[in-house]
Amino acid sequence: MILAETPRRKLVTQLVTWGHWFALQNIVVAIIIAAIYILNSPAPITAIGNLYLFTNWISHIGFLTFFGFVILILPLCYLLSNAKTVKVISSIVAASGLALLAFDALLYNKFGVHLSIKSADLIRDEAQTVMSDFGWQQWSFLTLLFIVWFSFQLVVANALWQRVKRLQKRKLGLPISSFFVACFVISHGLHVWADAKLYQPIVKQDNMFPLSYPATAKTLMSRYSLLDIEDYQQRKALQFDQTINGINYPIAPVYCAVQNDQKVLLLGLVNGKISGSIAGISSLGKHYGLQSNLQSSINTVLYGLPELYHDALSDYDPILLSLPASMGLDINVFSEQNLPAKFNQYISSWDEFKSSVQHIESNLAIGFVNSEDLSQLLTPEVQSQYQILITDLSHSKALPSQLFSNINMHKQMSSHEDLAPTVLNLLGCTANASAYSTGSDLTNTNKRRYIVSTQGSKVLLLTATERIEIMNNGNVRTFDLQSNEEVFSPVDTGLLSQGIKHLSSFSSKRPL
Image: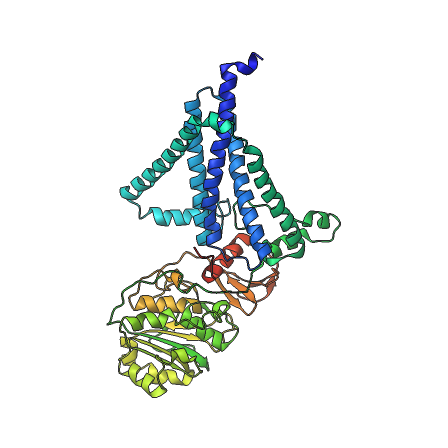
């Protein structure tokens, strides 16, 4: 009885009670920060998928935060006899942990990966790029931001300490813990069922939150040799939902200026083949047309997006045309193929198109032509006045395709998705290409190590040496890029997840 009433015993009891309320406050803040993962990911299309998302969000983030409290803060309540020291150290730990969670959320939303050893190279490259532009003002701002965040934690810690006796009288521990336990049980129960069924609206959320290892049905099945565990894990991780309920195009407003004196000619061959060489124009690197048919190739050139999005883009004008037109540039488009009626304002007849190019009248001329038409268009004067890009659309299934130009390029690998950003940059528009395209400007150095697109129901990801095909059920096949023969080397699932995240960036997210 005397032991229970000692000052030290009372202090420990108060610190432990305070610690639990401090942990609860940080759980709420962490859950709010983790909403970034949800708001920037496609919403589940079913009620059960949304139920799992909510319960997993609450229970997983709550568990991570509480686990951090148990490991890092709770021992301090027993080891240190100074309450002020406990509050200061706990505030530093909480501020650092939540800042790390926010950084991971931003990393995931941009690259599709979480903080890990596998993502270390990517983080280092990005950090070097960003930090190279940092001056003392940026470092001062970041330092001030952390001080403000730490101060907030310290204010909350002191406020809770002053009210700890009042909070002790409230019997809220059981209902709060019961709520989190219920969410935990529901989320893991739903995932076991979904895992056994490979139910897409749930299993595709597996990589959404950091350090997520939901319960699965595979352990028992693999024990009795009913399941190849490695193949199953790989297929599950790489399932890709081809259903596009809507599109954000562009992702963000595209603001930029254009130069009225710039002239760009973009030609896509829909019939015939480009000869081995064109006087005054060079073949550029390795160019790939990954679309399944000619019409998809044309749409990809105009929009800078893979065919996954083409149906959803039916009501949108391509930024490649609408932005220069809004700036008053002269635009002419000619196509041997029928284009939708919305392009009529840009379409010219062959004679009009040829005349505008030959007389150097168009700021932007885009022609989908036969190989025989090239000699009429590529006169010496046209080549001296226009920045020219020529690609082969008629053999889009062939790997590689062809790309010719009279400008300097800085990418070893390119695809049709890169053409729209390149043309707009040549016209003087320096807006971020990721706002309207999955491609990138070929005239600027890009550190992305892969090309990703879709062809029918499968995802294609190309590296410097391999072509990786991901079927909609998660099956993966790998081919040597040079010989086109299938190889059976280990698959970098981190790279594939990153590519799929990049590919999914234009699908409709949850409304803010």
